[in-house]
Amino acid sequence: MSYLFLIVSILMVLAMASSFSLTMGTGNSFGRVFRISTWGESHGGGVGVNLDGCPPRLHLTREEIQVDLDRRRPGQSRITTPRNEADAVEIVSGLTPDGITLGTPIAMLVRNKDQRSTDYLDNDMKVAYRPSHADATYDAKYGVRAIAGGGRSSARETIGRVAAGAVARKILKMYNGIEILAYVSKVQDVKAENVDHDTFTMDDVDSNIVRCPDAASAEKMLERIDSIRKKGNSIGGVVTCVARNVPAGLGAPVFDKLEADLAKACMSIPAAKGFESGDGFEGTLLTGKDHNDEFYIDPETGATRTKTNRSGGIQGGISNGENIVVHVAFKPTSTIGQAQETVTRDGKEVELRGKGRHDPCVLPRAVPMVEAMVALTLADHVMMQQAQCELFPDETEEALKPNPMGTTVSGHGQVGTVGAGPVSQRVDEE
Image (cartoon, rainbow, N blue to C red; front, top):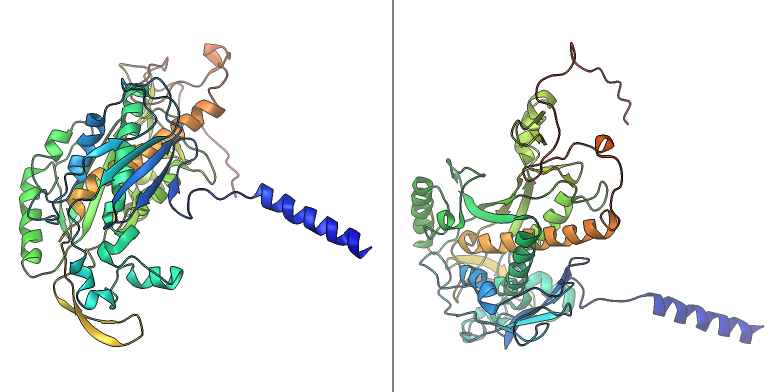
C-alpha cells in the first residue's frame, strides 16, 4: 500500500512540474503575443532584448530602430547624464540578410562602452544604500546586487524596451496609421499650456532639450531644472503620451483592460511613480454630467465620435477610437550630489554624497521610454484583437452592425437629434 502511495505521489509531482513553466527570469518579460524579454546590466558587457511574436515578411532596418535609441541615449544635453554612449544597436537574429523579418525571435544588442565602475566601487557607494534607490530592496530580495551603475535598476535597461518599441511603432503605423507621441507636460509645478493633442509633432517635441512642444513653457521648465541641477539636486515631473488613430475595440472589460495594461507598462519604467488615463484624478472633481464624454455623429465621416475626451480614448477598458491619452509621473532622480543620511549594508548609519553620472531630471529621456511601452502594449492588444475577434469575418448585415466608432473609420450615422425628446433608460447596475 505504501509503495503504491509513493508511486502515485511521484507521478503527481511530475505532472505538476510538467504543467509549470517559467519564462525568462521573474519580471524580465512583458506582453502576451507580442512579447519582449530584456537583459543586461548597466556596467556589464551590454544590454538588449529578445522580441518574440513579430509578424514575418516585414522590412526592418537597424536605422529605423536607431532613431528611437538616439532619442533615449545619454549625453544629449546639460540636463541629462553626461555618460557618453553611442548606443549603436546590433540585430543578431530574426532577419534575412536583406532585412526581412522571419517571424522568429529578434535579438537586439547594444554594447556598453563608457562604464566607469570606479565611481561606485572606490567610495562609500559600494556599501551604503542610496536613499530611495533600489540598492536596499535588491539586497533584501536577492542577497546580492550589481553595485556598479545600479545593474538592472538602471535606466540603461530601457534600451531593450525602446529598441523593441521601435518595431512595435512600425507595425502600428502599417496596421492603421497609429502614431504615438509623448512630451514633457510638467516639471514640478511648471505646466505645458498650449499643446494640441491632434496636431503636435515629434519635431515639435524635439525642438528643445526639455522635450516640451510648448516653447514658452519649455523655457520655464529649463530654468527650473537648471536651478535645481546647479545645487547638486534633482527634479521630477510628468510625461504625457498621445496615441492617435487607434481603432475602437482594443482591450478587454475585466482584468485585461487596456488602461490597466498601459498602467503596468508605464509604471515598470524606472522612476515612474504615478499613472493617469484621460483626466485621471482631476476627473474626481467633476460630476458625472460634466465628466461624461457625450457622443455625436461626425458630419464628415458618419462615424460615432465623442465631443470631449476626458476618458482618454478608453471606456470600459476598451478603446473607443479617440486619441488615447495617458500621463506618467516620474520622481526626482534618487542619486544626487548632496549629502544624505543612510545606512550601510551591514547596518551602520552613515552620511552619503552620490558620485557618478546621473540625470538631474529623467523626463527628457523618459519621453521615448513611455512611447516605447505604449507602442508595445498597443501592438500586443492589436494582435490579441486579431486572434479573438477578427479571426473570422463578421457576416452580420451592415444595417444590424453598430455604427463604426473613431477617427479613422466611416459610418452611416445620421446627424441631428432623432425623436421628440430624450430617450429614457432604466438602468439597474450593482
